[in-house]
Length: 138
Image (cartoon, helix red, strand yellow):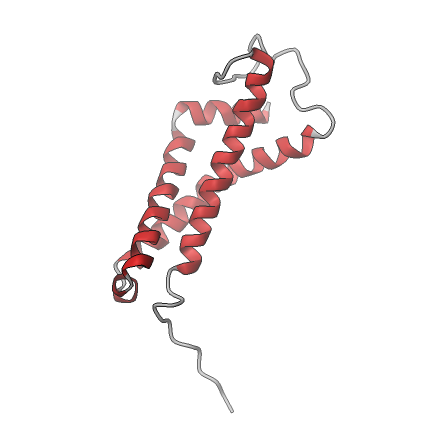
């Protein structure tokens, strides 16, 4: 006896993509916020850190228990934009699907998550995003 794969329905189509994109955007912006907050801890104000700057150049920015946080933030800021770009392309195709278009709420959620994924990619390629990632890698 063979079983055929379950056909896609409005209940399943796009749900995983939407959740993945929301999770990626939340993780990326949380990592960015942690990095900026850690730099602000040493300068006393919020600013864009850079390698060797006057506030963080001569201090141990990620001592002790902060080191795993730094590694996780670096990993997230390094790879999330690539995954977000692929997820946004996938979602752009899914947004044209009749199954998604039939479920208005799911279509709007997928559109919102796609916009957030594109925002992650844009922030990652702009100079402030690259500068913060470079500071984390330093």
